[in-house]
Amino acid sequence: MTLKNRQLALHNSQDMDGVLILDKPEGITSFGVVKAVKGTLKAKKVGHAGTLDPFATGVLPILINKATKIASDLLDKDKEYSATMKLGVETDTQDLTGKIVYESPEIAFEWEEIESVFKRFIGKIKQTPPAFSAIKYQGIPLYKWTRMGEKIPKKCRMVEVYSLKIKALDLPYVTFDITCSKGTYIRTLCTDIGRLLGCGAHLTRLRRLRCGRFTLKHAIPLKDIKPLFKANSLRDRLISIEEVLGKEVLRWD
Image (cartoon, rainbow, N blue to C red; front, side, top):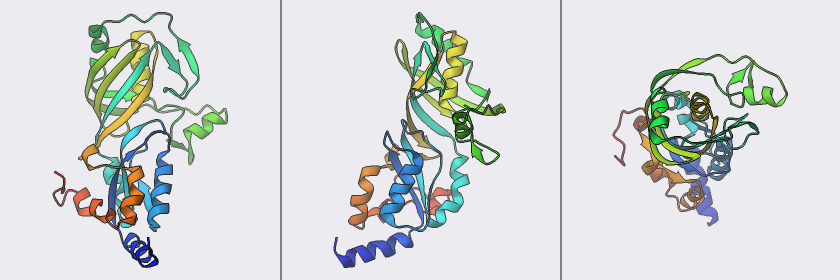
């Protein structure tokens, strides 16, 4: 990139307001994605809407400059995921990154048995947020309290599961699709299902397919951000604040 093009790109990024829908890769935190995008764009403000754990992938809205003010509008939206859980093992983090706290000696379930338990989690349900979560207590995330050995009382909260369907069964693994309200922890759902089955369970894979009306078809792989920026074509993939708020029709719909 020539000096003139670099100066043009820098100017364009500093007055760029809107949302980029990224397809977050595995192995990076949501904050890490924000940091990478901000470093590339040299934008004044960059944020995200809806944290994905490092092992999770999929739709992650990245808010640029003035769009950071509408984060709550995206956080309030329903989400859709594809996920895989492993029966027979429960971990302290409720996912594959944690320490094993319980193991069942035998896993033998029919599709219908698991499906009947799944149906009990459709609708409005109560969830207790996991100890390893970003929810804050006295301004500090719960996961930091947990790592310090502090046991913080966690309040149950009401969330809603609109649909929950088994897609594949290959014991001890169960792959399913879920559509749910904001604030729903899929790993907590897996733990609760495992306990109801009596064998324990934890989340092993999570891919967000949709956030509000933004799906993977709107998403850009993180690795493509820099090349698109250097080619001065990233702005073409930017979703305006008006589109995000539903005041304009999405160009990809």
